View 1 (cartoon, rainbow, N blue to C red):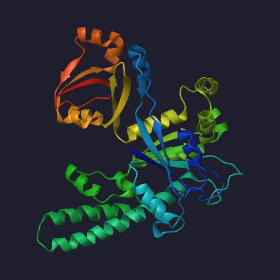
View 2 (view 1 turned 30 degrees about the horizontal axis):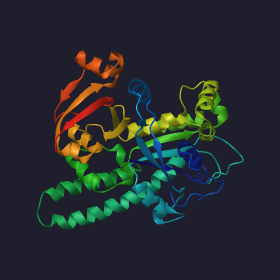
View 3 (view 1 turned 135 degrees about the vertical axis):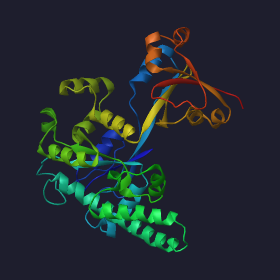
View 4 (view 1 turned 180 degrees about the vertical axis):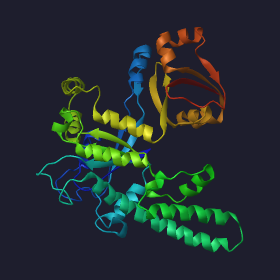
Length: 364
């Protein structure tokens, strides 16, 4: 699963990306520093793995991961190819969800592409370009559907009504993700690959001073009010401090966070929140060779989850032996959990739950 980090030039995208991935993406005080997208794969923080490792003493511990893409800064006119618009739009089309970095701090030493800090204006600049790009797609589909309607098939009338309702919504300056669709409509909408249908997490990038005084300021308040109207989430983060934290070793990192009065870094929260944004959960496998987390979509059934480990597991699926992580830890061991009747035998229709510690039985 891929998350695209987007925003106007000089809002802190590459600084945040550096902190997330420690990949050293070029970061500079001028627009279009990032032209080709930088890509980094990072581990999803999961305290459960550490606890299972203490129980099983495995040779290896493998967390699940998520991919972040640092996409070029966007300017007005991108939908018409201005700046690096075409590249920006093609790169955002390839990600599953968007982390939209919004500048919520003042600093005379860091230029703003529009000359002043205004988070709502910045968001609407990007949203407008995505909406304009989506309108082109929808208008082409409307023209094609009208031609197909001449065949007399009534299904094209329903499709036309759907596309026209989306067009009307976009023309109001509203993203497609704020519309509600039926299950049948979702299939059709997915075929449009609309940029504004992608889920969005707004990352409010604040100053070190604001972070130390509670992480709130007038800009963050504006952003939260705006995001609530479209059902998106806001996460407050100081990209500069997170980049500094990322350079520390584990003990130094813990001490620094304690000094800041934080239970975990903003990056850990961002990664976890992004994971949920994509509708992902983790199931766990545990044994002496390896303790590992596996990524699946919420709602995945046991055979398909088994297929994440190996296609043979899905093809020859017999059953899944499942115990919840909390039950396993409380019991103290897998054998103790089994004795207490906490290990369940689940069949092909079982829907996997986050934190299921699972042993798959299969025969090929």
